[in-house]
Length: 395
Image 1 (cartoon, rainbow, N blue to C red):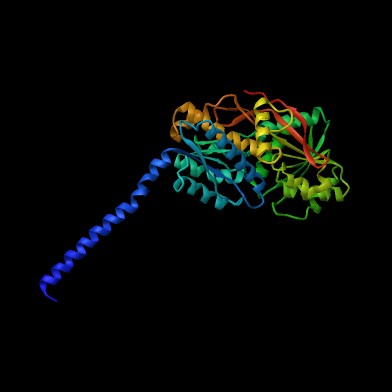
Image 2: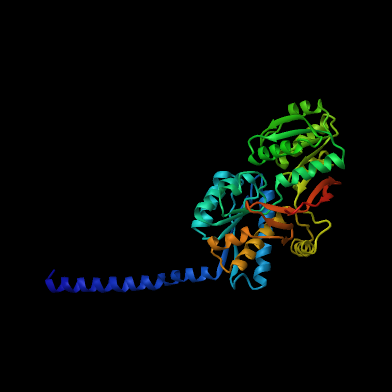
């Protein structure tokens, strides 16, 4: 091949590379618009289970979050930007919870995360959010060791440390209970902390802890624990775990002829508790920060919108707290006039008497919520109904 031909070929190749490079630049140009599109959207991540044993807490939390985003966007958004809920399924697994948290922050660029509804996964996610300086607001975690992770970590639920003393007073003074049996799921962070809160709160209240049994999440046979408890004749069984084990414990208790009912926190509050327990669940009680009965004006409006959206169904605790979680973040962004979590976290911390659909919420100096009222719900005729509404002192 001659020199001229070689030169011509080289020149042709060079021109082709230039044209190809130019085409690639044109093809990549739309990607450069992504930051501009993102700037018109405020992304809030959902952290929770959509499948698995604790999906009964995660699914309604997401429902409430999406309702809040729809309401905010219908009213023009926040600071002129649309709210976008970014969702993923952590399957109720701690390792997956950590992975989802990291992806929401690094891949999806969320400015805040609402979740997880459970204490155990929230405690895994909190250090990740704190290090990344992204606000995390749990709409369900009630156990200890959550907000202690740092100044970007919050929650909006009624804490066990607030609810349990109020419940114990009600048990002692109104229901005249004197003896209680405690059952703890010792591989569940929420349950372990909840039981200790109950032990501490019961001191000096005239209620005797006559039995203190241990089980594990996933257990199926509770005959030994129930046999031990039955011999002590408690007025009530306090179970600090979740609805699956709670229902099976009550079935065993009724099988052995026990008449005492079960009492627990929001871990028992699920239609699955009633479905699994059947008639054995009747009379069991759950302490919550929400009830659709005796609704405030804010709650009544939310209930009507929920019924319209979900074919007449009533919202539950996690629907309401998921809704409030997004609304509290939006409120803080508006007050701070910034969607930068390093800025609006201060406004979250300064939240006072927020009129949520799940109650009135104030964030205290330690970033822990105080919330009123306490709702004690009991299973009656196959449904959770309001047994008592107890005001909580907001100080």
